[in-house]
Image (cartoon, rainbow, N blue to C red; front, side):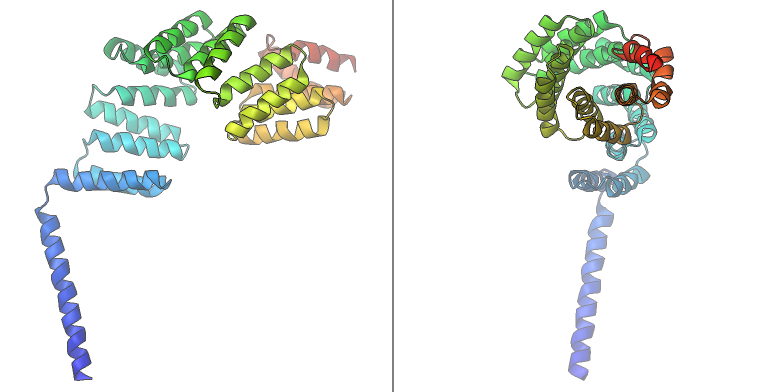
Length: 319
């Protein structure tokens, strides 16, 4: 028994000694080394899709150096993964505060402002990028996105074209241009750009979704369905793909399936007025005047130019 106790004491002493040595080594590290290690640990957690733990490590780094702009930036990215836009914007702003020349922070904050509905703040970040990082395609991409949200389509198209000149292998930028042409009823130009985008990257889901919208407008409902199903197979996270598929099913006389997908889309994103328009269309098709007008009356007042709204609002009144 005494031998075992001595062995146990030796193990404890050895463990304590190892801990003391480790502490001594760690305590000799500079603040730069320590905060860098916390940053790397946070980055590892981000890669493991554990943003909450990542944020804890970034806080540790910031406790050592509250001006550590990389930690602020990466913490913002972690908040984005948690869909915490306000927190992300605040952290990107801190990164910029401590590193005024930080183009990527301006770009990511601008995108976050857009997602948060703060279009003019996003425009300010795009303006900074165009002035201070003018050879970077992201500056013009962000400017194009802002102009699109503000329905300034000529400016949006110009921004996407400039971005594409600087980054010609990016198929997304061609799809963005095609989308603006589609909004302007320039379908031939849109289709040409989609073909070019597909030659670069046939796995770009947005090009298939936009193709589906063009096919639907042309009355090719089955083709539209097949195209949007390609988009969903490539990216199943986009609410508006399901909304579009639901619309096409309505016109293919699979109304219950269509409504199910439209409702799924609303559950994923309840801020899309097109989804509520499609519910109104469903109720018109079902002959339910009260329910149809419940959705279409407000849309007709707020979005009178939206495709199909006036047509189905008038149909609902005639029921």
